[in-house]
Image (cartoon, rainbow, N blue to C red):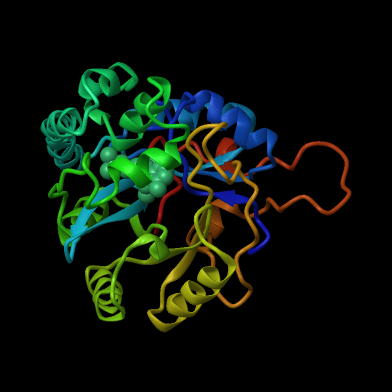
Length: 313
Ligand code: AMP
Ligand code: MN
Ligand code: MN
Ligand code: MN
């Protein structure tokens, strides 16, 4: 199961990606992805379209999300999988999270105006297909489009990282709160891109310990923003904390993302893939063999009519 081409992390126009859920499904399928999840920030609006498009292509789909959490003064992203997107409590929690984004974006606009960049809030909002999900990514795209910076990466370095003029501190969900929402909706949780947080070893230990104490099951070991030594480190931490391992590109846009959909290294052999939880649903299907002609054999979706998710039993 290590060799399954699973890509369990990407973003659509429902959050800060540039492609629709349907276009992402096609791109994932064309890249040979066999198990896919759309994980928009704080938003389930793309889930139905993603599942339908994946099923039409014969590609296995598991519901996904990336929830913004505040922990030890840092923003941490928690991925959720296999949950019911119609769960009322989860939806209410996410709606509250999204509501906080507008006020934050207005403050970012004021802050950037003081740094000499006028009308950034209006500019970012105009680039956000989902106005409730206006994010730093939309500000970055606006600053590039308006000629203030040469790339999204440059915008983050100069304006949007903590300590820079456009950065506005924000309080997201609590760790326990986010996990309660996901578990209440029947899902499982994974720590996203753990190498990207600026934690001391003690803080990182606290994150993993508390995550596990709240019932979190997995950590993203292989992902678009992990270097090989970081993959090895978090494979070891997955074993230390008895967590399953996830794999995802964190793809946002064709011209922005370093890692294309479905083009990640395999998980290290010593970890247990998250998708072993869904082995029953995936049973009977297999990854394509090297050199095999034709498209990858279809995976579970068509045989799994459950409306909400591949269930995470
Ligand atoms: P927000 O949720 O509004 O704080 O925006 C966070 C998003 O900004 C992340 O999900 C990434 O898509 C993007 N982001 C954060 N840091 C960087 C960076 N250094 N370069 C490019 N994009 C980034
Ligand atoms: Mn993003
Ligand atoms: Mn993230
Ligand atoms: Mn992401």
